[in-house]
Length: 441
Image (cartoon, rainbow, N blue to C red; front, top):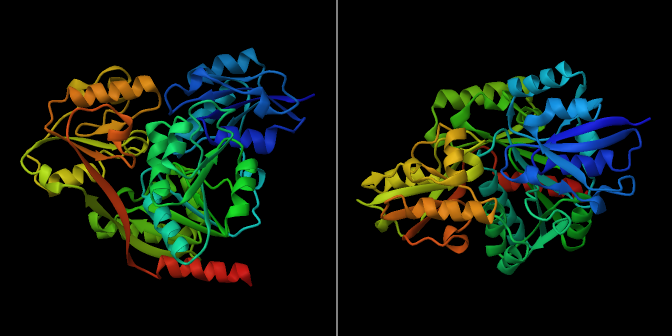
């Protein structure tokens, strides 16, 4: 008799864990997924064609708030947590709720969920959302490509649309972003690679995704999401710690997993942080993972047309996940507004409508920036309406995607980007070359 299970997720690791551990496992029967963090994902189901022959119907996806009811309704034996960037206390609160309802609470690990590749694998993950993974991964992709290697970038999943259609996605042109109807959040991650002439893979079924990437790649580069660990077993694990959030490296799940297992820890944003906080992260590393190499770095801010900022009323739009569930109150956009002498930084909250207004209620720490949320056409329309009603002279767009491509906005837009800059430690590119040399041997 199979154990009845629920998988707690957020449209990412939950689907991967199902494919890797549950799909062909007769000991466990997944009765449903629960969803949180990401808007609209609880309104779908996991398609039968991806679930395998043991399932004769789509698997429903429910809001996580219904967890106690679902445990009783489906006579659940096990609830598996399968999403990331949770404070350790929050993980145990969820475990306590599950156990109070009579079920067991469980976590799968790398041994049960990581794929093995025939290519050398470099993974860039983090201890928190918004630590600065993407600029570092993009730096490594450029460096590897400049050395003549074919780089297959695999991105942590963001399947927010038609799951069956998104099983395997390959992005090589900007037209591919339109073809797959990418959300703002997806464009933020995929567009920089495509614009640089590189290919990036993502989707739902990572066995098939890896199989598609390997034939055209000399190196697999994993670009992590949130603070999750990689879906492909890395030969070199590079983990980003945020100097502005010292202590979070040992306080969030599964960021601490990454921190303890890292081969290289990059302490990022050091110029903005107190020296004592950088030392605190180093002390944690010395205690938990003394074998790891340590690199310090900054994120250099690049601004298009900074002269449009001085003296103007500006609305700052920041990367959505970083300033929402990532917990940051600002990013590159607000820093650029201050650096280039904005006359006024607009409070976006009075102009917010619909789900954008709901986001401000859910994340009260946001006061001076607007999160670039666009998980649906409805939400993109509400984001555009909020921007147009803000009363700003200029929009500072610090989301990694270009808002003027995905939104119908009637205000001038100044783009802001981050670029990785190492400040101390062994050169990251050299550490990568050393790893690849060992792999060849």
